[in-house]
Structures are given as C-alpha cells and as structure tokens.
Amino acid sequence: MFKKNWKKIALTAGMSLTMLTAACGQDESGESGSEGSGEGSGSSGEESGESSGDQTESSANVGEAVEYTITGIEPGAGITQSTDDALSEYDSLAGWEQNASSTAAMLSELRTRYDNEEPIVITGWNPHYKFAQFDLKYLEDPQNVYGEAEEIRTLARTKLEEDMPGVYKILDRFEWTLEDSESFLLEAQEKDIETVAQEWVDNNQDKVDEWINGVESVDGEEVELALTPWDSERASSAVVKLALEQKGYDVTLTPVDPSVVFEAVANGDVDGSTAAWMPETHGTFYEEHKDNIVDLGANLEGAKTGLAVPTYMDIESIEDLQPAE
Ligand code: PBE
Image (cartoon, rainbow, N blue to C red):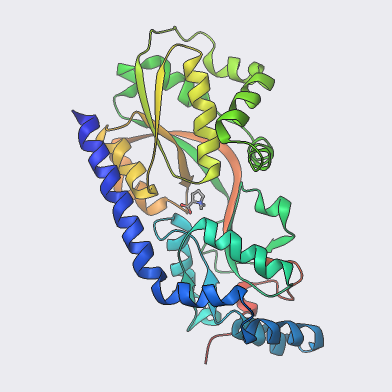
C-alpha cells in the first residue's frame, strides 16, 4: 500500500521536475543552443584572455563572455539551491543568473567550451569523473556558501532496525572512499553502472564481507532504497544492492529528487538511502525531516560541491568575478 502511494509521489516529482526544466530552459536553452555555434562573446572572451595583463579587466570579461551565467544542473539538485544562495550572497555575482537545466547539458557545454578554451563557470562536485577528464579547479568560496567538509551519508527509516535488523546493519556498515567512487565513475564511462558495480564487488569482496558478516540470510525479503539520479549515488546504491542480494534480499532502487529522498525515508515509504549530501548540500531537506529519519553517518568522506572553472581561466575565487552592469 505504501509502495503504491510512494510511486505516485515519485512520479509527480519526476513530472514536476521535467516541467520545471522545460519551463526554465526555454529562453536559456536558446542561449545555450547558440553557444556551441559560434556566438561572438565566446571568442571575444578568448581574445581578452590572451591579451590580459590586467586581472580586473580579464575577470570582467569572463562575466561578459559567459553572459553572466553559471552553467548549472537540475533545478531540484541541492547544489542548485546552494548556487542560488551564492548568487544572492556574493556582490561579485550581482546580476548573474544560473542556467539550471540538466547535468548532461552542463557536461556537453563544458566539453564544447573546454575544447575551444573558452571560459565557463559550472556547478561542480566530487565524486564525479569530470575532474579526471578535464583540468578544472574549484573557485575559492570565502563566504563558505558551499560548506567546508561535505560527506555522503546513509539514511534509514525510523523502524528499520526493529523490522529488518540485517538491512539496518548492512546499511550502517556500508562505506567506501572518494577514490573508490571516482575510479568506479570513470570506469562507468565505458560500461553500465550495474556491470561496474558487479566488478567492484568481485574485486572487493573483503570489504563487502565486512558489511555483511554475521547478518542472517533471508529468502527474497523486499527492500526499497531511494536514491538521486546522479552517477555517484547510482554507483553506491548499485554496490549496496549487490551486498544485500548476497544475503538473499530482493532490492528495488528508486531514483527521485533529493527532497523526495528525505520525504520518502521520513514517511517510511522506502527503507533507506545512501544519497544524502551533508551537512550543506541537502541540509534544508534534512532539517525538515530529521525527527523522522535515522542518520547512519558517512558512507563517503571528502565529497565537495562548488563553482568550478577550467584551469586555463585566470581567476581563483568567486570574488574575482565581476557583477553585471
Ligand atoms: N549533486 C550530486 C547532487 C547530489 C549528488 C551534488 C549534484 C545535488 O543534490 O546537488
């Protein structure tokens, strides 16, 4: 019964996300559509980059060259909210906008601009493969809008320990490193996530054993985990699914927006999630639901979010950007 309701919530959230994306994208996607096809401001940015001896002038031209736009991702992402906060908190970002469309659109624009050595300011995060594929740097964030030390935490519904102590134990014990996750994600550029997860488990059965040791096997008991649709969480969820399956659980993974992950765990519509970016990125969702959620702690330490630019750009801090006139 729960599950039926839950699917409805998930579907509604998915639809509103799509509609929001379509609505937001309309005029902005016009801009980004023309960006690849030789719009003038990109190349003028490049010229000024070459001739720049003057830091202020070259930074001002970065703003112009990117049309005072941060290339963001999905509207429902935590990092999109943090970036809205940055837009209102930094004087240097006055008059700037965030183009929140999708991760795929951000990556494709990054690729185009990067290949032409044109400026771009993106919303970036680790774990992700983009730092291995492109030379990127985070802009310093002196006002600490994106937080200092992010980690990815595992959540459980309040009754999980009582109802399914084995699942609770495995979720509680699951952890891996930033390096594990990023080499997984790089590998997953060539193969699908389920294949890479199986390979990871085959190569790291000793770690999996630490999570599942002493847990009683079951016969097809159903477990549902919520996740967000980004590769980092698709990866961790796929690994945990295989670990649970080794003990006989029948695991369903349901991707939804971050706000819905917290809502679904708090309502007990799903058993848990490995997708909570804390304390900053999903902090507002956590605050809203924390009384009805069990926080099982970090499954990955050293995560990070922020504004990032290619290293060929001559700026180091969000404060080096210039407000739009
Ligand atoms: N991310 C990746 C997500 C969580 C996982 C940082 C893009 C976000 O909500 O911002």
